[in-house]
Length: 98
Image (tube, rainbow, N blue to C red; front, side):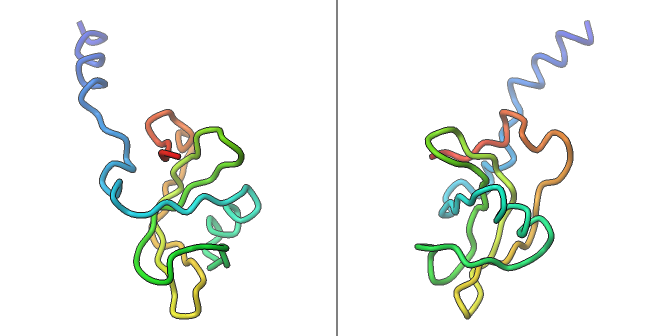
């Protein structure tokens, strides 16, 4: 009975990144992702010049993992503002659209 209830709930859950799905994605490599996760603003080529963005980690054509949200600073760097942490960060529900 509990398993059936869990399955119904699972179908209703949306990816955490859904709330900011209209924001522009910035996809970074693993080294840059570590810097963001350590709270460091980073330079990202071809990033927007202002506003808030979705931060994603990925490479090539594979699905990118949602890291959290960031803000473009006045000097053009991308600063992490709210990040998703924990072992389940790479869960299928936390993928960014490429």
